[in-house]
Length: 385
Image (cartoon, rainbow, N blue to C red; front, top):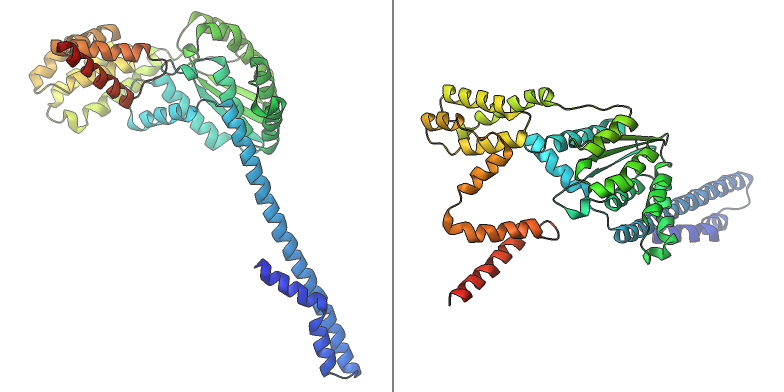
């Protein structure tokens, strides 16, 4: 297309069309008038062609600038190396869609995030960022992890915010120096100020290390909540320091006590008992199991999920009724019962697996665990010889 535009522009500039017409026609007045009109037409064509060339060049420049900006932001990302909150969010949403128990507050948090992203945030004037503290992942337990993740998420949501991020990167020798906590915090505050409204959703404050909460997190929350554009929503289990902080510093707290959760637990129990896993049982047996689970749950989704898995192994109404009458009273009792069901011949290997899970420097994958088990089996065989 550019080649074609170039040729047309060249021909128009040389006036070949006008010269051709003059050679054919005489200087007759009528012909002169026609030539003037033709000259006007060629000027319009020339302007149209130049306008098109300018527009094409402008679009190409925009593309190049966007590619350059993306490259700079990628360098910022590689430098900060923030943890990915979407893994936790997607897992919580999957549980919400499947009515799976065990992560009640995370499901609540993920639902709120979805509503904020879809119904409230209007880019680029407003933005949202979120973070899931996670006791299973050391990369999601510290104040630095929180700051890096929020800063990266928000800096991608409008040009002014991304400019702050890029300048922050350049101020640290283009990524050759790691930022201090104070500089990360100041950069995040600067980014937040680029929006008319910013919504921050934080899940499981209790899973942030206690020392990090008391030394950094609470002061940070107090500071950003004073900023006009910032709205903060956080969830947590009951911990003394967190409870004391929320009572003093926050404008609104909601205690999700047992009475508020029980209806959800009943809905979950009923939905599971109606699946094909429980189709062999009579309505009477399932009703007894449902009522017993509901009365003994005390707001614990995970406890209910564990008991339903046990009941699913029953093979008759009589067995299901008997099991429903001797359910463990707590999660600790449930775990003890699970461990007691392990065959003795597997004790050594299970102990080895639990050691890996408990003391791994970071969350261990199934593939890594399988490799560890295979190496240990080799050691067992070598010792036997």
